[in-house]
Length: 238
Image (tube, rainbow, N blue to C red; front, side, top):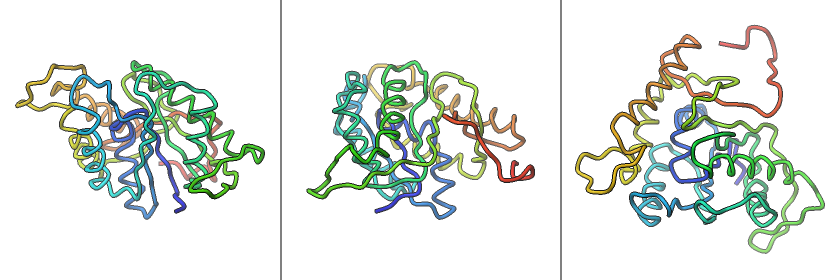
């Protein structure tokens, strides 16, 4: 299955938090999108890997994502080396996306920056014909995405561009709250974490609202780029 956009996240819920509104918007525009989670989030204070597997599937259905896979890397301990790069390359070549979205280049959680670099390097290496990979016993063709964008997570990084998600903020919020083990639940008996408070979800919406303010819309999501942005004409910006 060829996809238009492939979204990577170090943990289940990263894609939704960083780019859930953009994912929902692009799907509504007719794009085929997939999500690849690098780990099962098994080191998370709340919930379990099994619970998060189910939550990720629920979120996939809410967003309308075409496919979601989990590479099963070790939460907290995966590294950017040949072994892990090859597994990411297999996903890139399998789905042949034009655009890849991945973790923030710098963030509070160490897996986010690691995941960002790992996916970025794999996107380049995936285009090298002399790197051989197989999936289901079949030799894969080289493939390099045209664009790699990094979504923004915990830290308030300055985006290079922002996407208007005004019509999709509620879908984004619904997809995030599918991870009920991780986020605010007044009935939960599990320990509190930095992301389980009610104010955290409010802060996600506030950031989207503040980015929207900066570009003249109600809500937006920001991304950083790896190469200079280009426009087809001066009036192609919002």
